Amino acid sequence: MLTQWNHEIFQRIDTEGKAWLLGWLYGKGGVTTYSGNTYLNIYIPFRDRLLLPTFRELLGHTGVVTRDLRPEKNVDYFRIRLPASGLEPTLDDLGLLHTESIQADRPIYNSVPPELRRHMFRGYGESRGSWGRGRQRYFYISGSLDCIKAFRQWTDDIGLRGRRRIHTYKAHKMFIIARGDILKLYSAFYTCNPKFTVAWQREGAEQAIIQCK
Image (tube, rainbow, N blue to C red; front, top):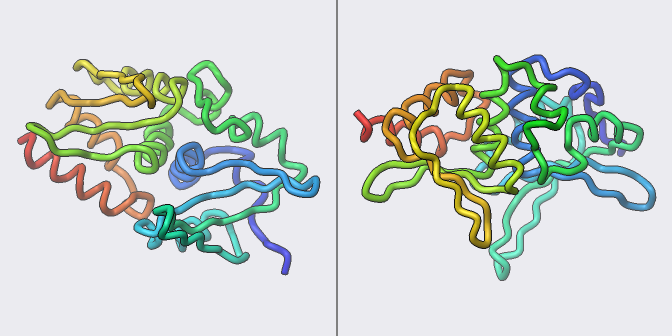
């Protein structure tokens, strides 16, 4: 059966849902080639399976969703695989052919309107970050150094002023720990349609706000 989906969804990023989906793709997506054909893949961890209908609705997807379950390797996720041959120029313009390089000076940062970037970075942050609890609440995000730098630039744009530590040992991570920054990040991320959020991430953010207050 031929997989149907909306091939024009990424021609223009002009809605909250598209921006959030694009961010998720940077965090848990990728492009593969097989037998001369191009495929766009979206990976959804089992714990986030309730998002599947939202992804399918956004994409206009009618194909099969497969599950990769390998307990011996601690692997359990769903994959949406989209035939994308002929769309390589569009995917490249958005940086999706190189998902480890969301650079602030690449087209992707400018392809998403400023008012929608918070939704894109929420998608990326929810797929590659988490709210944690130490002696105080904090948020951390991981990825390539280019991704982290782009995320940091965006946090500058929305007014975060506290120290944002970037760790580069083995993996690139950025920690946001200042109380005022946590409040601003929460507001930027979650003043949105809750449909385009990860429930456990949002709950973690709400717990951070409770503790901050």
